[in-house]
Length: 218
Image 1 (cartoon, rainbow, N blue to C red):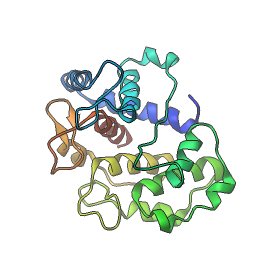
Image 2: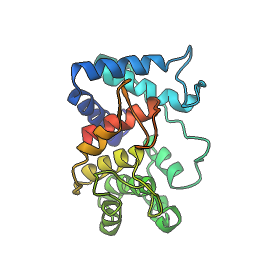
Image 3: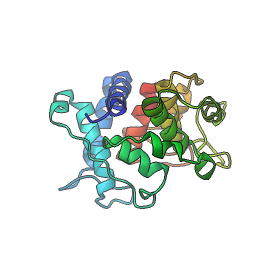
Image 4: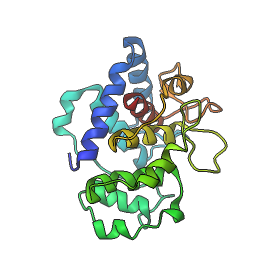
């Protein structure tokens, strides 16, 4: 594995997986299998998508740890994100190209979202050796009384993606978060997956990934 954080993500996913009952594990396996295509995995619209392939391949390793020795992360950036902002910097970091100089130039005010805060805090922990205390507090304040995290200060409801990355990040930088077990349970879909929000009734391999990451970070 290329970075310490990638290793931690895998360990957290595996911990989340092990917290599931045998029946739930089988349901997750079956759901993920149903999302496979000849060359990868489907997106939420049912089309093969290289962005979703990375989530499916990681889950395969989580289900079968013996595959870890042969696994090489393949970081694919969603086209809607790009590589010219904090997310691009984070992808470069995951690929083994950390830069304290570039990190110091990031203006969080331009990317005031939970995901951006998580990216910055993880990189600060590894590259600068100390996370920004004010940014940690900002992230903690995004947590709802249900245990879920909002994507931003303007988001109407908390979601699974933001909750998963926030819980993981706060654990990674050794900061506190409220228990989110009930929130995660509320997003469980009997087919063997996790929904993006409580208003959704669908899922895909990306949200299976986030559900297990959240569960393992509790």
